[in-house]
Image (cartoon, rainbow, N blue to C red; front, side):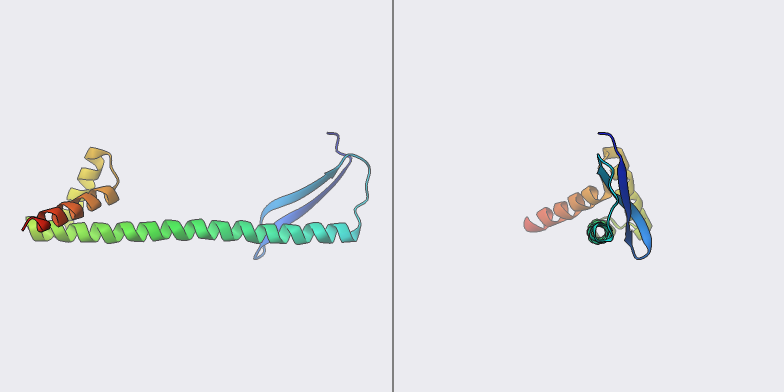
Length: 123
């Protein structure tokens, strides 16, 4: 497509440009102010949607990190109580098992907690 006319409008949120919305025409065209205003409105709305999506992703990541920390803390407590480890030894054991088994620390912590729960059911 041969571009003859071009209109670019920034996608901005809180004064920060996060992209550009571009409109092309294949014939010569002078964009009217109303067209510029419409494209600007669409760009502003799109920028807000993009920013909200980014915030939702970041929030989910933070929630998962917090949940992992809680599980690791609980697993450390199990190791400290059942094996007599210090807090640092318990953490290092979880970390070492994570590396040796190529599993996340969360997975190792969940396995420790599950093992404790299963052993607790048998008594």
